[in-house]
Image (tube, rainbow, N blue to C red):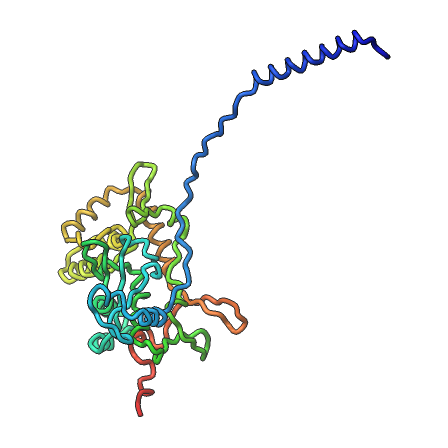
Length: 348
């Protein structure tokens, strides 16, 4: 319906007044939105992915091309072929260096005649001589592996973790037989063997449920119970394990009793072998008498879980290109590491 000019102007004025009110109301009611602060989520610690590591021979070639080894640069040692010392990257160890002080360096040398002679006395087929076998394994580590800590902290082969020992023995072996003239054979089926290197072996994969309790600052696992008690558990060191073995042997020979249960868990509860003495150890045993079912359940679970995870397995590809995982066994037993498996082949 047509309207007069005055009506149209009145309508327009009314509409304009409403729009103005909307703008004022809008400005008065809008509250600036303050972003909600984001609380960082604590991600569980996981072991870093394992990278493909160079073989011992490749490391030796790299250092030869560089003209000198790290040992030569720092210690004045000479290097030619497999003489001298070779640096093993700490992150290539089964423990990936997580349980050593940051900046730790590992160096190896080839086994020599004196070490091979002692190794040859091993009888790894006699279960009654397993203690002697363990001593011989440590003898090679003591003679052929050097541990260096940053600064003035003295390193010691006894600081090496049990899990890393076999890997380092294989590294020493490969450096001893650098030309590959004594392949280490592993049976994979009836009548079929394949040569193996340390890179083909899966030494340990720590489950995430345990790894999330790893402390980078303390270089161990830290578990805090709801009761408030804190338990620190370590990957056993060669020094702690050797001390406990000698302690048990001495007690048995003297016909003295000792806690045969606690000694099974003790390697994971000892932070440093340097502080071990009979008095200090037996104080640990006495303190453990106060632990409840909660503490022992946790300790037992962690020990069993890591023991199962530390069973070495061999990974290889079959004829169809499929990855196969089998338990690790050597043709000729562990003695074959530093002896020629077919000694008659060296004859004229």
